[in-house]
Amino acid sequence: MARDLYILIAAFENHHQVKHYEGFKTLKKVFEQQCSVTKEEASEPKIEIRKKPVGDKIISSPHNTDAEYTRKRKQTVVGHKAFVTETCDSDNEVQFITDANLETAKHADSKETLKIEERLEDNETKPETLYGDAGFVNGKTILESAEKGIDLAGPSSGRSQSIENFEQQFPLACSILVNKVFRDLFFVNFWHK
Picture 1: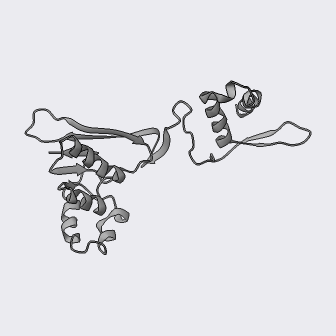
Picture 2: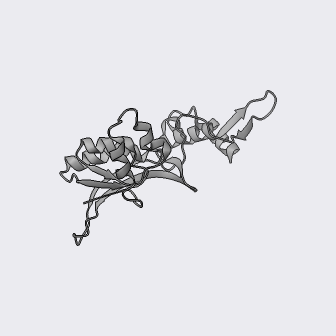
């Protein structure tokens, strides 16, 4: 298959129309990322499939060039990450989705927390308490949420993002944060009352 791609690219890379087609550009980029070509003088070029693709932005799917490869625990995924926020008040007969956003698969959950809160505020659905799973809750996001008047609750995502890293910067807040971090233990994405 790699040889077939090489032949196609060689046949059309200088064609006055085809070389400008997005599909052709994608095909060529995937080939360059996935394969190496060694041209030897009196013989056919040697085409090898790389063990690991090269490039700044690896194309994981030619059908969606923005899709990215990521791993979450033991699962590997090519695609995007959806962030959904909904109400979770047991007094409500119906719960509502209050925010939704689509990002690249590699987008860190913790980087989305502040953006979610800003969108909720802009749409006049700012919660008093926002519950998130461990990817969203760390010392920094708890403090940023508190500055906006939002109580961010959920499990901490581990030592690298825990409040210990914030002790030097925020010594008075640390005892308060410990109580907030361990309040609720099992959440996925965000819920609020």
